[in-house]
Image (cartoon, rainbow, N blue to C red; front, side, top):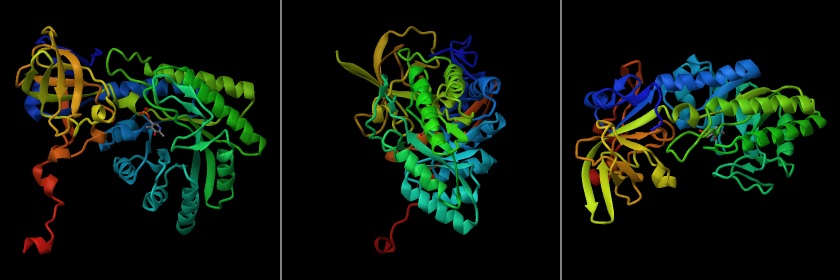
Length: 437
Ligand SMILES: *Cc1c(COP(=O)(O)O)cnc(C)c1O
């Protein structure tokens, strides 16, 4: 656990988040429970906007909302002067329902449907970030019918792959995302957009990966993207906006050593200012899209310990009342998490255990070979850094209910996502008439 003012052990030896004792949260709301620390979210948002207002005022931080998409988070982002990027009709409508203005929304995705493009046009999103030729024709057609013009960015692939712990620079581009700069496709696509009557080409976008700790890949991205701007300028194409994506790493376990979130932004902006001066290009509006770094460490999940099972001399399993239905990240890619017994934070961690989920999949784990005090049924188990890509990836697998989400701040707590009920779960099920009779 990475301690902070709003995440610490209180004088009862309990874990406290946002001024709330987690054992009291559990008594009030039950488990499993997602808890989000509002102050921490706002602190990160501000650290970004402060750096930008000082060093690159013509800019917008867009929260990559696939990390955690609920009305409350859009409302928080709006109040911190952030925009958002959305990748589906559901995310777009949630943002709009939280009064985010279309002007501050960017619509991403490599497989947008006609319906989703229509929604983007109807809600006047600032830009659609196109990622296929098909989409360009379709969007132009939709705009023609709506008698509207829409802003368009192009997702390009700068040939930097930073998805793993070691980033690689490639000219071979095999990602499903983006048009290659190197082989000329990106420029061709931009020219095609500029020929469309109802599309306004605004600029270029890249997102080089996620959970990145080093600064170099980001600097390299700035270098390649500004080189591309120079190339486009030579063809008489003006680039008004430059969107550099997100991907700043967060702390899951002590193996992760991220820099302060704002250091990534600072490095990017310094590099961009340098490139603008050296390459003599007109400064574009800068868009950054952090997702995980805004909500990841702000969130924890609380569970109740059930069975504790020992396979003699091999392994000890601590089962909890959650699992891959509320956090599929271990099952998906063996993601690592830090855990603790929230009701016994001062007890010595003397046992190596594996925290198992309750789903019928042997890969359903939450943390493998982690240290805990000897766990007993009824203990409260906390998993840290679950604010990003947990609730947003949750499912009803095994007909488990998606846990509610509570927002905490200054000792107060309130639902931002109410609990599902079993009625909700069955509400849309039908038995066909020929089986009923
Ligand atoms: C996922 C994504 C982001 C955010 O990535 P994080 O690692 O969560 O910061 C930003 N931009 C695009 C296009 C994305 O797909």
